[in-house]
Length: 361
Length: 155
Image 1 (cartoon, rainbow over the protein chains, first blue to last red):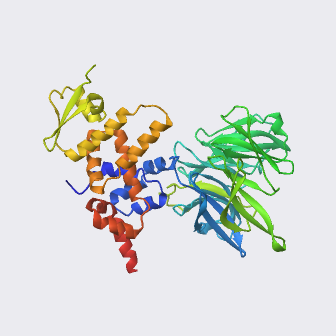
Image 2 (tube, rainbow over the protein chains, first blue to last red):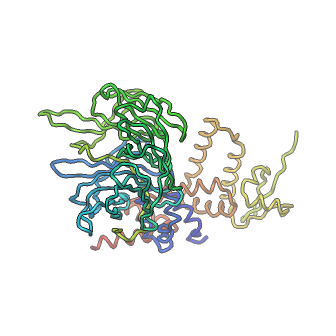
Image 3 (cartoon, chains in turn green, red):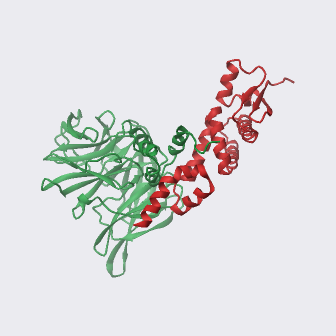
């Protein structure tokens, strides 16, 4: 019997290795393995695999220093502290916010000290392989949303003029082309008075925002594959709620309404796009400042809880909360969380592995 | 009582195995041979040893005999059978993967792929050093990583 198994069998094995850390190390085994793992087909297949290990990215401030931490967050075990992360060098010492996360890429947005003095820049960052690419936003445009097209594994950014008022024109950036393209929005809303929420939610290759006309009225969607906008009117019972946000609940788009001084939270879910929203579950929180970060597959939720320590110093902790048993499990990370920075959850992926350019103008 | 049709498989060691046709057609290779009419006396499998062939037949039998329902019990039973099935030593797994690839049994091949993938992911360099001493073919997977480890030690 020979000592080597045929390469095609080795491929079968490598394809089933999910953790990105292992795959990066396997690139050093042989030239064959490196070219296999670096190939766009392998990266795309790996990226869309639903069984990826998931992590929570948290930024917090301790002793006046900013720290970024990745927390291992898989549905079959409690989240636990994983590792400290170092943000891409382009954005150290700048104020940025996390726009969103998709297929393992975190999209950071803010005023950066880019090559063109101070400009608005977006950085796509893959924390699992520590690679990032910066994209300068054209003047007067504002980034609306980010996502990875599920069909082509191509990261895309949507931007619009005029602050966050919807316009009839928008621009889309695709990483594969490295350029911005104009598209029309084709929406039938009273565009002059509507503006969009700042926190998009990406589900199944579609970006969603809430559109406000003083009060929330619509959900706007952008399909990353077809690059088309869509609109769904919120039912009347939801439409005029004051404290409303959208989230991903068990794979479907859900609307969270914090009622009664934020003690009670209703979750309304749209099971299929275009279906009416059905009321799913009611979770009650103890304090006004609890915010849901993400729902786990088993219906539990990870949320942020602020409590007052001695000498009135607010401390924020993360906890896993089960609304049925009302049981809480505290996660080990605690410190002062900057409320303007979103905590976000990302999966492991190999996207950006092949990308060599560090800033795109 | 009706007789189910049986197929004879003759292997590398010259031994013959008699299996029910439903079990014998799990491997796609054998199914095609039967369709092509090559199975009049016995099907030759010269590159598979008795030990491996009997393991493969055991797996095919179990999966054919278990009803294809969505019942929790049936699924759990199969799962635990598969779990014990792959608890073989690395040499056996190596021979198994070559045989199963030749016989073209998709479900079993996926199982072995996943088993080996779980074995090689997430190992520290020390564990890899140990594996290298134990098994030559696994070493061929890790030679690059081990060299890298020693390189970094010198710095």
